[in-house]
Image (cartoon, rainbow, N blue to C red):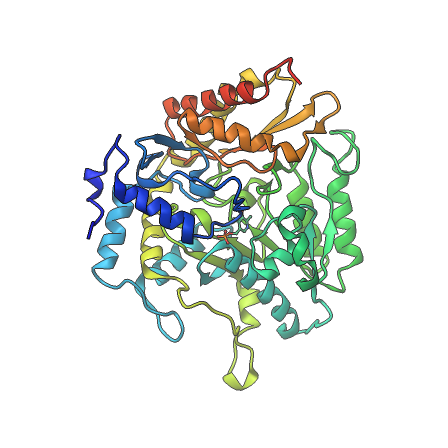
Length: 470
Ligand SMILES: *Cc1c(COP(=O)(O)O)cnc(C)c1O
């Protein structure tokens, strides 16, 4: 029987039969997330063998720059010696044990570290294993809190979320989500949710323009919070950047206004920083751009530097206090996952945080973001590029049919997809959100790699959408 060679023996040019076999198994047995699996157009995804820094190496000898951080989670690149070693060291002690009725050092140490670096007041850490579970836990905690608080408010049992929101794919997270393409068919399974308009200046849902609008979108959300305070358990938002909605950057002041309204009207604020957390926006947490401390903070994706599935929902003492008491009081949070707070994941997270917190590391994110944006400037005059929007190292290039009217492209043409496919032939791995090309490289990306990434995107846009053609 054939076995895979060691990683340093991976072939760099010749496809080996081992990889061809893996491809067939993939084709015949793997059900890929978010894939149509069209029998007429079978999927032939790159088969990655190894990674190094910001690069991934496939079975056909291609080297691809990881332009979306392996779906928004990688921070420091692949095979980071310090994280590798931390995971190995932990593996020599304990790979996994439960947090149900048991404790272990990596989770305890990570909880302490997260409390130290999170916005002040979030002193309690509920571990789980991915973004959707972090959100699911936050939603249930908010609901149960309202019933168990010292002055119980069981009628506060609804949520306010944004139009076009994305918070993960489990049913509670889907209920607060609103991306029609992903969520529409599950409608009958979901609980009703109140909606506020997106703070999206390029496509202002209120038809206004800054600064004359005076943040009318925030006023709308504030008005909804005020009007529905009696029935709202919580407001859930992605602070500052609505990622899966298309890298939508909220205008300054929106988050602050919503957070203040939540405080004023006794509604909890859940910040979903699954995408924005851990330096992606240039601050450790996006809430910190506006000095906001949410009541519940959801963290996942970047928490382990992109190594292992781990997540955390941070809560204030006030919330946690409502869940304490003798067993007879029945106040426990009956919710949990087998791999909650996995020790290997926690060890990776601690090592990743050490790197992230090194002097200058976070500060460099904004500089790198600016460099990436300026390297994309050849696209600014392109008739099909509507907007390039960015916060830190989260960047979206929105493609449109007409720059003047901002009319969207026909989604059926899958233009964003075609551009990312072309970029792959130029050595860059990307994944679009409809007709928004997303650039979200590891924070560790170097200037020469930023230029490689930007050049591939500029060339691919020009290739797929030649200026002057229809
Ligand atoms: C990716 C994402 C999630 C879901 O995280 P998973 O780990 O994929 O379950 C939730 N919220 C936001 C904002 C995300 O970007």
